[in-house]
Image 1: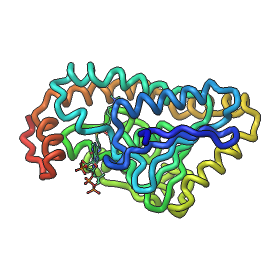
Image 2 (image 1 turned 180 degrees about the horizontal axis):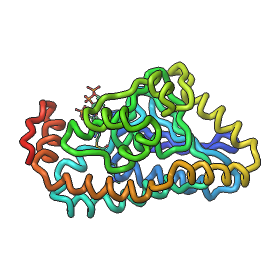
Image 3 (image 1 turned 135 degrees about the horizontal axis):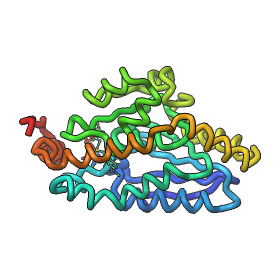
Image 4 (image 1 turned 90 degrees about the horizontal axis):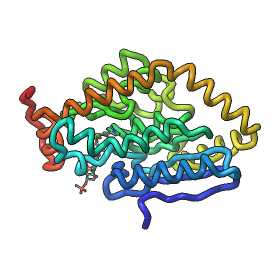
Length: 258
Ligand code: DAK
């Protein structure tokens, strides 16, 4: 079974992450396939709106730690992740609206991927978080930037510095997600919202999306670049090696501050 499923429902293009054995960890191959599928829908004149869905248990539990675990130093991190970076940039610059359908874990890169979408439909079981600090690093794909814009400085600080997670209700109250629905409906609600958007005049929709993004994204490029530099830099530390090793060995990490 493919790790990324691609289908259409009328004028809606649907991409589903399907890697249940690792809770939809975002390997580079998965991100390649996601960005290719979404890019294809963005160029397809028959498609007006897109949905990016996870599985009921997990939207995505972050970038694949087994791929990052052995990265050696900041240079190694930049080398390995820069190709992946173009996938994230492509998703962030899609012209057509993209709705995330999130259930279960949206952690690390999973939370960042949901936030890179234009709207989020969450199931009651959805949990959002940036737990990178717990494995010796920090977010590298928007977690310090988009999250702060979405929930404000105080809550973003706490999430980024302690790994505290937001449940679906709190995410709704804080404006991170558009709606919260029972778990059996999260995908159908996201598709329903996408179909409503797909009925609107496409040029007006795309112009409005670009204008809303202009309001929230001012300064985002600089912020993302600063975040990425700091993220790569942490691969020069022993704490990054220890954090990711401890995750793989299912034990508590011992931090040395080196
Ligand atoms: N990577 C790889 N495998 C993962 C994974 C991940 N992120 N999350 C879970 N898994 C795997 C587990 O290793 C386990 O595999 P097996 O032992 O069964 O082989 C399986 O999924 C089930 O996980 P658990 O046994 O841990 O399940 P639990 O229900 O006990 O816990 C959990 C679920 C989601 C709380 C836990 O698995 C967890 O804490 N996962 C890690 C969450 C995390 O730290 N995420 C952040 C990763 S760092 C960038 C782009 C992206 C990024 C950075 C830069 N650029 C383009 C520059 C993103 C970075 C990150 O996301």
